[in-house]
Length: 480
Image 1 (cartoon, helix red, strand yellow):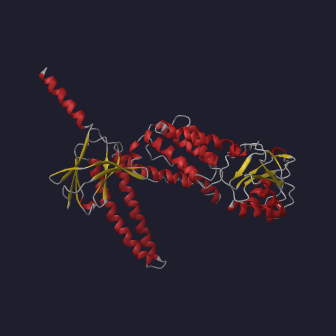
Image 2 (image 1 turned 180 degrees about the vertical axis):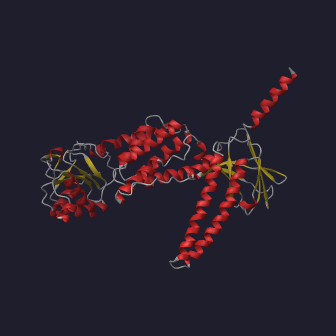
């Protein structure tokens, strides 16, 4: 019984040690008066995790629960720092680091962690190779084109290749450890050779499609720790910057495909970070109709209850906003309007305009930007035969006399209407908050373009007329 009890206490002690962390740091040149901070990467930001306690010049970070996998930062009083790896595969109570205030990786010492030993050794190697590369670049700047320059460029490529090979070797030999997954995620995929009999454009297309479909091959989508490193955010940013065409539907497909792959693999942190990242990415996108992609993320993840980390009040507000966006997303049929003209004696229904293209404009006579845009729209309209287009301009305010004077003085010859009797809820239908707002509709009154500038109207109209086969394309006309 006594032997069993001793054995049980030993098991409990072992379990507790692996459920805690104790990181000891000795910085030559600092004393216990100097406080150190422990932070971790999370995406493209860093967050404070702990502050040090100090005895006899040894700073210690301690906690009752083990830290999650990731790349952490030990921050010195002057805000300079060095990075360390934290892994749940190791006993986090045995981490020891020793360096000086210069933080030179070549003098960094570590005990109790194989992963950090490999990490520092690689960093030292990479720094040496980086200095060699810098020296070569300096020589290249002073050389003219020729064999000497070609030789140096080749040497530069060899250095880069050698660094990548060393990193890949560590990843292969330590595949189950966090450092292995981290370093593997840094490896670049190289597209296989394509059929050289194809045209250059077709070869580039095949390479692009292969690289896009294999982009995430080296990323362990089950490893939460990759989010607690700079790698995952940079991979996300590059993927959508490089492989996403400016088409909302393709962006939605790419987003869903990645999120579903992460969800199937099991990383909750990658799942959370990717959805949060894409919400901001699509919101800030400058491409036409990308509010459709933003709405998709909000509606299908946050409002669908899949954003387990999000505050309920935040989600509720987001869902209200997404509901307002939905009626006027691109490819939706534009909500109908039936408003009186400037005589207030007759109404004009937008859906009854029988033209291949309808331009819907919301404007205000006192809006500074409207004063610049409306004359451009008017001149464009006057320059056309108007056989195939109509403009339906909605005045958004209530200065009826001022509006009528503006129409008379500026001679806007297109359809001009206003919500004179307050019966048409155009603000709610179109979520109008600022003016001017310009939407371009096809014959069926589907929204095809929105929030464009007046100077882009002519080419937008031309595109829609060409698409419907009403006018020949400019390219085919020029070819003739």
